[in-house]
Image (cartoon, rainbow, N blue to C red; front, side, top):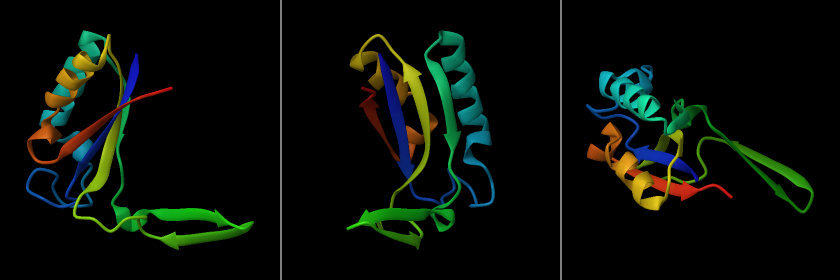
Length: 113
């Protein structure tokens, strides 16, 4: 079954580095990705640009509304994502727990339809 891991945490911290550096290139993240690919569970993933580059889009009564920045103002943002293919939720949780971002942020694991 496929699961989406939403990697959440503070945009700037010693673990994620400055906003102009791709956190997916951190050696721990590279090693994790290589391990999960070798195991056959990692399908695709990427870090995201900072929320300052986001545009939020809404349609209300046939009117397009859009604004710069994220939808929610929170301390933690979605920093990236990984699509994994696991036997069950237990394996998906184990894979998410081994991700380096789990040490400083949180990872939401959601099954795909």
